Length: 238
Image 1 (cartoon, one colour):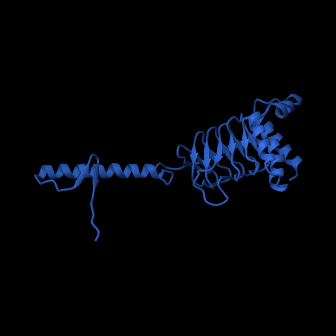
Image 2 (image 1 turned 30 degrees about the horizontal axis):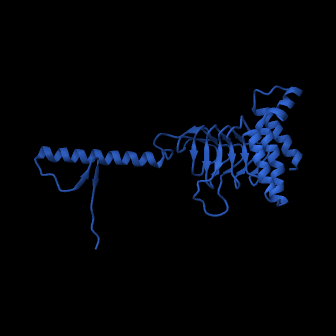
């Protein structure tokens, strides 16, 4: 797609997704002059060309800082962004250098497509496939992939791959829907932290029940290292 095609698709995305923009000539002016998401992505298209095609040093980065000051949106010139991209409100949005964004993606204010600081290799930032919706304040971190037609809830923290058509929420985010169908509470949608918490509580209850049973039977308490609510089993290896 040529540059004009990208700009046109971004303009249509703003008109389609922002109900506050009126139709007609006034709406055209509001998008072109008053919509920070459209201004930021339009500038990014040119800066990305300078940075990746012409290999111009320093200048694209410097100009991107001016765009950030102007719009409140920080997009690294190296980020690859597809057509029909829309950022609503836009304040505080950050998109990292190696991020890849597909077509018809919508971001709200405060979204971060960033790194965790532990990445190895060239790919440090996430990939969002086409038709992904990301709610305000969500953080998508690391070289992970968010599948097409997925929805990321507001203020979610996503650190693992998200399958196509999924809805994820929470900190850290967990899958609650796939293709519009809600997962059961006992499915793999439960986060590992929740599973470990349940296991620890069950172990504690079993220990207390065993101790109460031994007391009723009049048996002596076996020697063990027990601190608070955790029983520590000590093993000695030769």
